[in-house]
Length: 253
Image 1 (cartoon, rainbow, N blue to C red):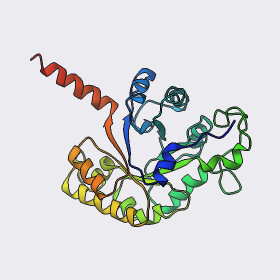
Image 2 (cartoon, rainbow, N blue to C red; image 1 turned 90 degrees about the horizontal axis):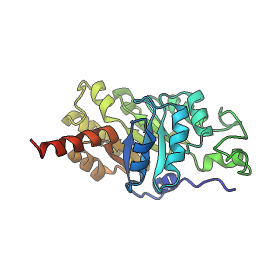
Image 3 (cartoon, rainbow, N blue to C red; image 1 turned 30 degrees about the vertical axis):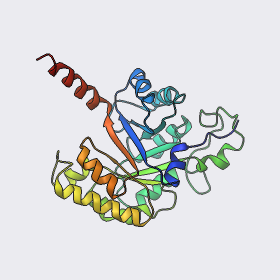
Image 4 (tube, rainbow, N blue to C red; image 1 turned 180 degrees about the horizontal axis):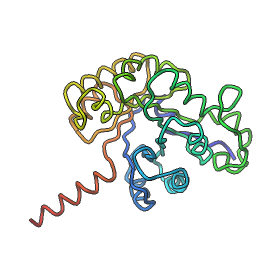
């Protein structure tokens, strides 16, 4: 058996726009419904949800038959959790709250086998299709896509150093925490936050680094897209359900 190709990583390398949806509801039916909705990628969020590593492996199996690419956001820059998710078969990871080049290098090390990293070696996991992929350890990193999340004033100041770390495949700018860090909690579309985001994108694009973003504000998303955002999430599952329910109810006021 051959190592599965990471279509999302290839799309980033080729500069193709990727439109995604965010999943935080811990339910395989919701995930399967969304997996069939023609998004390019789907984020399985372990940071701001009850989803854990055990559920993540089940959800990766749920998504696998569909053409959407699954990305897993870890709960932290934790090498133990990262190891578990990689062994579960995740090929694309988003690491939250990366503040510096040092923390970015730690994330790279966590997804890389020795001698260049610290990822623990186990030959019989879902990632290696339980040992049926020949030379998995030698080639795993070819298809692992590592994304890091910049979401504070400090991280934004270090964004070029973070993006310059070898092994980083994309940088995601998180508007909610960034807004709080800049003094505007709960206002991710505030003009100063927007300016900071657009400025960060400009720096990343100058380095040739793919940029990701999430917002439910269409105007903000369009501004990010125009500035060069490449992998953009346009919906969150729970918000989408609530919005649809409210719209339906309003028809029967």
